Image (cartoon, rainbow, N blue to C red):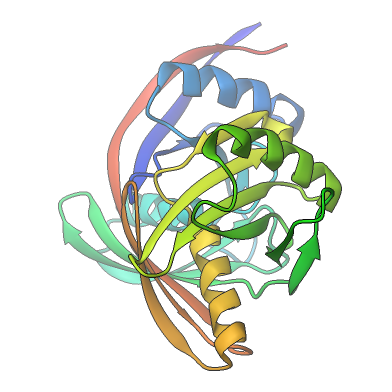
Amino acid sequence: MTRDIRYVLMDPTGNRTILVEDPVPVECQPAVAAQLMERESSAEQAGFLSSAEGCDLSLRMAGGEFCGNAAMSAAAYRAVHTGVSAGRFTVKVSGASEPVSVQLERQTAGGWQGIVEMPRPCSVETVKFPGGQAYPVVAFQGISHVILEQQQVPGDQAGRLAKEWCRYLQADALGLMFLDQEEGRLTPLVYVPAADTLFWESACGSGTTATGAWLSQKQGKPLTLSLRQPGGVLEISASPDGPLFLKGSVTCLYEKTATVEFT
């Protein structure tokens, strides 16, 4: 069976995200996402929008993972469709137990600056992996991130390790965050088993947040950190026990309709 599906392509700091506007059963979402991402070759992930009681809207990522950039994108989508130039939106996001608050301000036609109040991590600890390596792991409800200093893991092994370590941690999704503190640079690799995707992402909101949370705890003080990523800069303000604020930008690129196969 085929159906026409409406979607919008968003660009949060280069981490291009497909937001599906029409209802799609959860069991069909990974397959539909794969078809749409094949059509939109620049897209790195896909999520599905719906209404949510007590929130502005609901967002479920194709693999059920959590994504800060997608939450910002969903809020911008809502702002565009309600015609407001600034405001606060609440988004119910997969992988987060509580709705996420997003503050938006229009910068240009179709472009927004966003600040997302990110969930606190469930844990920040050093984990010893099979083989004896020990690395910081920041676990959120819907995704975990391993913080790696540059050159700790060869690039050609990173994909294999992301899959192995995701299974070892029993995580819903796993990011390897290659951090160069001296240069203020972060290179994210994200694996989502339920959606069967592995991407060197242009930017990663939850990975940026994980890095800030880890460094804040390590230093024992609040910090604000700007991290340059392949798609641009994300800023995280973190404290050891307080709120985490992710700052970035998002642009609505275009809306389309595609015919997809439902099985």
